[in-house]
Length: 344
Image (cartoon, rainbow, N blue to C red):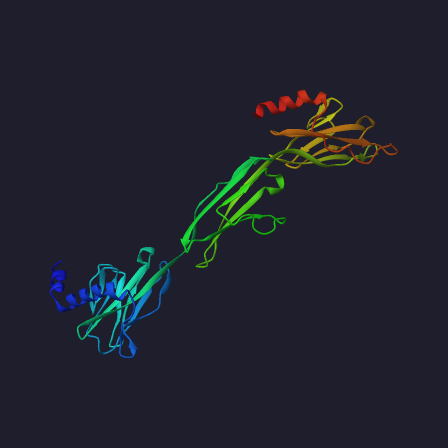
């Protein structure tokens, strides 16, 4: 405080104040002295957040006093530092050059800076505007979501930066074409299973590499038996019946012959259930094994079934099963209800 009071009693202090007052008249336009624009500050300075900004003022030997100001605050007067900010430093004070540097620039440093000089007791000014750019940053994005097929989805992606970033959404899928949205919000009405997967939000403002975040959208749907095939196997040989089904959540499977459920460990049989298929293996096919088998696939959203025929050589058959049916046979309903009820 004592040092600041001492500065207030110097001629330089009053000269700087006079220069500040002149801002109201010159409005930042350089004043001409003879044929030379003087003083002359550099054009607008643009830097990224965190970088250093150099503010330079061209002067000549007619200058008796110089100062840099930020709005109404004195940063430097001659060689004397008036501000308390340790990031601001004087880097040049010569007969032709008066420059300061602001290290680790932040957004609050943006704004006008004024070079004020005095020659023959006439204050003159020049102004430069510091522009601070900020790389994009995604500050809020929707969480991963699970929804039943046919529902509506709303995804949000909020980003900040200087200048304001552009937001785009796209579906990460080989079938997707271009952007789905060029906005903070992505709305999907009546979503289908083909629209499940990851959705990418990109925020870009040309200051730095675009920032990318992803949201996973899981679409739940009941089982659909996509592939079955009737199979011919001679007596005494190994036979396999396979039932492929897609579903989210993954389907569970059951096998029936007539109204009898087949289970793992039954003599001569093996039931192998995976996420997307079920396989029924006969290790030693007998005449009694021939016939019509029913594969049932189910999850919390529903069930479907398909018939598959195991036949012997010379038997008449149509080659393929009748495909997938959403509504199971009436005699299967009690068995399915017993399986589904504990899940709800």
